[in-house]
Length: 299
Image (cartoon, rainbow, N blue to C red; front, side):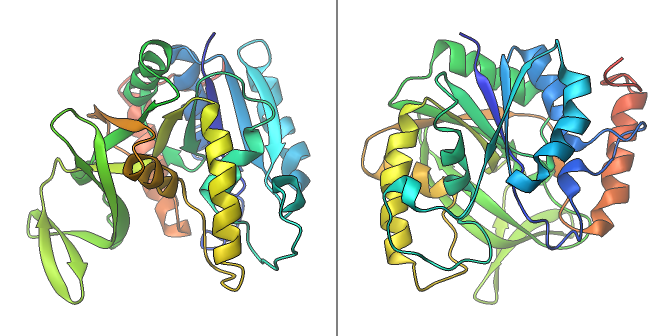
């Protein structure tokens, strides 16, 4: 059974100012998602599931169905504020959804095979998709998951400091912990993170998580249990978010599952602010010029 690609595309894109998930970046208006799906199809994925807000479903179908029909199976699931579906009767007011780990629960009723989760607004590169397919078809189990590890030096922004989930990896190549460094930046040819006003160096090749995770459907039950506890503990914190790394951290600390950190040499890039758009467009243009992608992706 071919694995499934689950795409996190329900974000509100408040810092970007518009729906960056369906904004055009390629030479013919291709979205970043287009390039991810193109690589996923070539790597061997059999289905793509979009996690979106329900009001955007017509927009997504109009953009992606004509391109993907006959190429890969598609499905759409919705991230919303309904807590009763998780057995939570109390109403908890939120302006934004509960985060990426809450989002993946939206796929629990349509995904029955090994799957991976990615962000809609990040470019990951073919190597990452191929390595994930290989893992999901030969190594994955309900107690052995994975994460693609990017070299931190290949994930930095030209526009200022970034936050990165720095991975601590054991001698077997498995994840020990992820530490969120909220201010990472290049300086004088080196890389640093700042904490409590002090600078600390990071090696260029330090592995970081860019939200590219591999699971089996067994993770849904565990995540739902964790989410009920998280919602109860944070019902008075309207900005608290239930992130995927919390799943990894929980399963590793409880010895329920290991996470193999699969390294990739690919350069990552993504879009957070409007100012990022020209850089992303230029990066894709270079990939087209060097033959990584055809100019017309879906012809």
